[in-house]
Image (tube, rainbow, N blue to C red):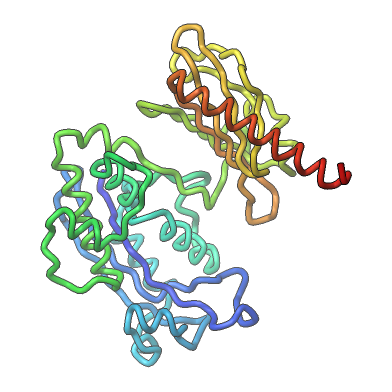
Length: 324
């Protein structure tokens, strides 16, 4: 398998009134580095793209990437560039990006021009920004650094300017190569992410995956939040190590209406924290991303405390409404 490390630059409408809802961000530049299974560079890709939707450059885009619309008008359109890019990528590839946005916007642009989808459901990829945090941000592995900060911290030579598609792909590949060279690389690189531009079309296509410290589930579409939370698979709290039903200590509750939490206990492996994120689909329905993770007794207590705070907030709201 090869790794396609890519970056995009895109343009958008100056005002919401001029936005095309099917394509809020139009790709105007693509850059990529191809790495083999040993993370050695075996190819480069760099193309500008002639826009067909937004013919005026947004001021912020102009300030960041310094590309003129006159320059872009000499290039090929997205369909031509994308066909060449797909051929250049080849088969058996995993996409790699700095952060989760580029893969989503690539697929949105592909949809707009009626390209065959990259997948029929959630697409696994390497979020190098996340992997960098897991590898080097020991105190706060959820921290997300800008690419130039990571490059500087790793002492990678800055031999081309940032903020162009090829340059950012080039530096992202350099960071990925550095992670791959570490003695702990296998542990980090197996923590791939899922792009959910396309969600599972039915129960059989739902994603169930177990990593070393947690399990993830990505559901099919539901009409609404209530229907999702009533689904047996969504609401289950099985231990991901032994697959036994773990006894719920705290049933699913939400402190904010978007994220749900639960606490369960497995007689063999201990406490499990459940977290559900309710996400909207393009059609304004919903799907669920659930994680289950083993935690300590002290971490379990924080869930009890969070539940009590949520109850207190609800009591205060009811009191304010009744004037009591």
